[in-house]
Amino acid sequence: MTTSGYDDIQKRFFAEASAYQTIDTQRMFAEARYMRTKALARLVRLAGASVAGVFRAWVLAPAVRWYRRRKTYQELMRLDDRTLADIGILRCDIPTVVRNADAPRTAPAATPAAGATVHRLPAGGKSAATQSDDTDRSLAA
Image 1 (cartoon, helix red, strand yellow):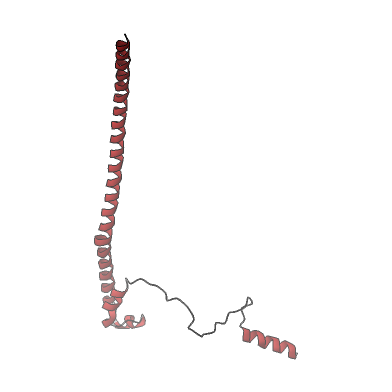
Image 2 (cartoon, helix red, strand yellow):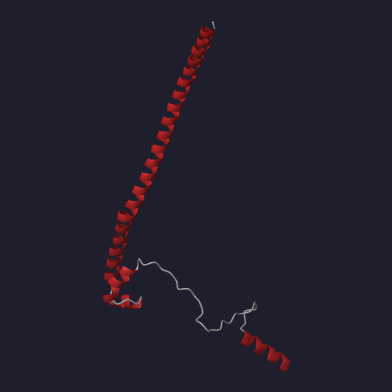
């Protein structure tokens, strides 16, 4: 009787465990499909963004730069020599001007040279020499 009672408990346990296992397996497969789809969508987004970035950097931007340079060159070449002289360009300098037009415009840092003295204006807007002149005049009066 002990063996058959043990067999019944064992059968019941495995029957319940297999039912739980199928539910958990189905849920696990559903979650795996969801995670795989989510990862694939992210990968496609990243690949699309990187392809667009490469296209923009290697194809589109150089084409736009070339077009702008060509239009600038054509417009400057249409001008007469007097107009070019007014804006400070010689006709022979046009290719150089157009080529350097795309160069990044960075202002040099305004740092004083070594050993140079920096004269700061006070809040009134007058230099120290002007203030001392005003002081001398007021004392003389």
